[in-house]
Image (cartoon, rainbow, N blue to C red):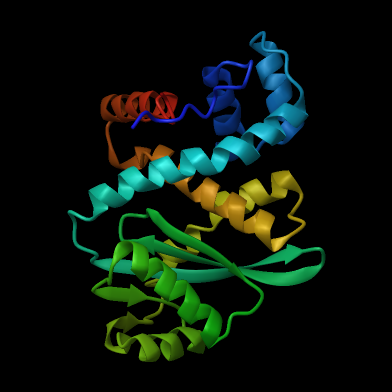
Length: 235
């Protein structure tokens, strides 16, 4: 079966679309910032084009990145997950963004709810476990919703709530928080859920952990990530 070309009816080249989406999602830039930066490169587009492209192609790119990473992660053990939630204001009302991170800092799942009770935690855990399987250890804070949800699932004995142990989960919110400030917030739960999922996949793809590698290895990994990005959704 021939793979459908998602760029078929667009006059702009796929390379420019991929570049615009990467700049907007990966870096804390506004739509007009991306427009100005592309203009400096001789690419004359409107900021509304950037908005349309990320809404249209962002989920496609994220789904392809996620599919490749899930296939690779199935060969490794689900040793430890870090779960944490952070509040996000939507039209003045508080919502909660749940995030699951593995022991290497890869964002596994992002999930938006209006509450952070047992029902919300249970839905978040089931969604994550359906895609990635069951971990050996689940690190959380002392929010009681986690313990109540894990009792329903049957892995309450895997929960670990020791102090300072969940710093990895809490720190995973920082890139999103920087991006949120540049976007001046969100207007709906659907928009927040969509952007959080796309942003997590793009962050995973370019998360090169430069503090762990020599400069030579970091440059090789960065070139490999950019090369893979330029091949996303290619016919």
